[in-house]
Amino acid sequence: MAQTERPGTSSRDPLLLCPCVRLLYVQLRERAGAAGNEIALIETLRDATRQSYYLAMGVSWTLRSKHLPQPPHGLALAFDVCPKEYLAEKNWNPGGSLWYDLGREAEELGLEWGGSWMQRDYPHFALSECACSAPVAGSLEA
Ligand SMILES: [Zn+2]
Ligand SMILES: [Zn+2]
Image (cartoon, rainbow, N blue to C red; front, side):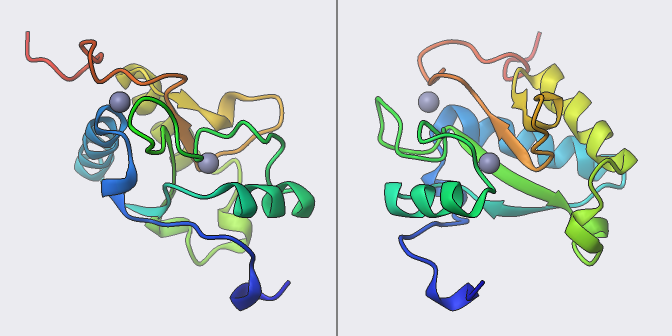
């Protein structure tokens, strides 16, 4: 697979995450980092052309990905991250314990985690819909 010739575009810019999800990403990164698990942001927003390509490559399973521009702000509601410790490992060490630590933190924050899907997608974290106008779990101090 030619890395340089992939059709469409995608970004790893956190500013292309919906503000509600961006806040949760920052919180997840801080929580994981405090536990010694530094994470790298891999991908945020992608376009429909790139999504179709991922589908064809078998690395995504839906054309309704939350990485695509989502209402109401036209930004991504999903992001992919990887523990920095796993970046050099084969396929990012699927099933490694750091993934489960990360998944647990994310679910506490109210994020969906791809690692708990039938077809596991460990790096994937998302909200099913924009929560910018609603209090997001974990975002408010008690
Ligand atoms: Zn993803
Ligand atoms: Zn939002």
